[in-house]
Image (cartoon, rainbow, N blue to C red):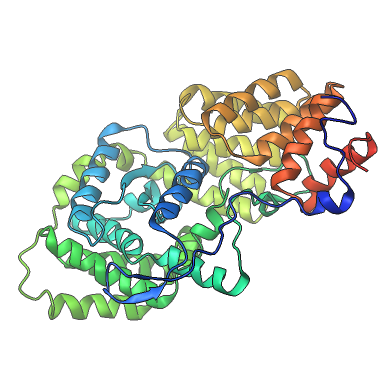
Length: 440
């Protein structure tokens, strides 16, 4: 790229107008809600729901350390999920289900039907009926189009809604932050908190779908009871779930009432033994998952020595655990031990070569250790595995800059600014491009 031509020579005002990609235009009009059968404001089409899902959900799944590597677990979750979705109001959506390696207690759904539950919640549930309640609830959000409805309201107020990039969510004074660019790539809006009315409707739909497939409604009661207990005894474990899924004693009471009235004659099943058999590999390392939960809580408090102790205990129980290795890697980096952090990241990469996060983490730690060619190799591999992360572009720019390859660095910085123009990273990119004469 020539210094003063291919960089497009844009003005400062033009540079500041570069915005995140994926902007939705106004479509206008209403749509029939597939659940209620009533007209509602809907400015997001079903095809856009699917497109946003496909663009953003892979990044969130990777931020949650990818799907668990036990095929039996994922096949089981998929089987339960697909049976419920087939009986739902939108059976033709491209549903997909998985259990991810994240340790926090949560489940979530993207608007096109991509649904995940964490292994943290899987070891909390007691039977298949509770899993069906969890999956049914998330399918309910998809069926009632809660995300699309919320976005439509935002569009009506703001005119447009930007979906994507969002790198400003990861601002940090260091160029190698603990989780820079991992997850949240557009997922912030798609997974933003539901309203209490949305939650009530999703609960109701979940019980309906459970009943359709002959599950005991006690599964929903048990799920609500367990979440309420965790919320009181270990709030940090369920912090993310209640941020997006408001919990209240009312939801538990409603589930009990429906069990005793609407579904009083249900002859459904709980299927405890089948559930426990199918998640045996996760249950086996539950003590490690609990240690990782404690370690992540300590990380949030910046108590890194305490976090390291918890992660060490977890890795003694499950020495090859992908999430555990990456968490230890991040903990080492937070303490300034970049070489040790790189070793853990490389172990994680070798343990789960199909998953992208370890590539990104190895790249960042290689950058921290001034192994710039190695950093570029990992960032390139990450970009091929999981394209669309603007932070990868930025860090490639930093790597090229360190290698003295100014034109190549400028190209990456320019690409980064096209999708993100706010925060410390954007300022660094803009300052370099102006200082080098690519922008004026």
